[in-house]
Amino acid sequence: MTSHAHPAPTHAHDHDHTHDQVDHSEILDLDATVLAEHLTSVTAWLPVAAPPRHIVDLGCGTGAGTFALLARFPEARVTAVDSSAAHLRRLQEKACAERVDDRVRTVQADLDAAWPDLGRPDLVWASASLHHMADPRRALRETHGALAPGGLLAVVELAGYPRFLPATAPEDRPGLEDRLHAASERRHEGLVPHRGADWGPMLDAAGFGVEAERTITVEIAAADSEAVGHYALRSLQRLRDSASDGLAPEDLDALDRLLDTTAAHGLPHRSDLALRTERTVWAARRA
Image (cartoon, rainbow, N blue to C red; front, side, top):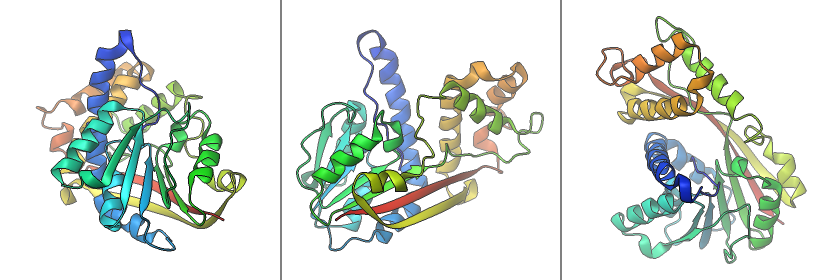
């Protein structure tokens, strides 16, 4: 359910950005794999008045929501919108592999700039994308104007980044993951001020009527999904890249030992890993 709505850096940062997008695409794919069952339950829960024919996936990432919605509504077509060309290429590749490319249109757009022409959708899906936007209230107003009368907007948002380690891990530096997340939050303070927001009042202000709200608490042990260990590794590698300068040297050493895939206590070999996350879904209708 995870996506990214920021515009891509250009020119001098192209090489690093391409590598970053590849890493992020892999994390989004892992998120979709591990949470596939929960995503299916969310799409089944949506209070649609009738099966939608045209769906827009705002901040689609590599397509977790797109493909869940295509499966849930077999007569629908999806317009998948993202600022990342790499994410959209990956989504299109998967659509071709699954032979649903005739039902998918991709649109590259910065949703903080000129709003793209998305037609008149019956359902708009925005999963972990609104909090990335500089002005999500504007995005909600634009979505309200684009939706067909009686159309539905589904907003899925995370309280924070997923967690993987128990509080007692690692043995020599317990609580390391909490400190890593705290360092990341300090570094990004002010950059994503809407993460963890209550979207209900903003939906009301944009003219929507909130019909339903649901919070999903997820805990999936590594023993129940082979992808959890790989997801943990990639996620903590990414956090190390962004927040390592905020960690004590002892924490950084402990983190590097966890990220060492050849070490006996490295993440891929730990039996105590579990994906833990909480996501809230708002279903809001255009009157």
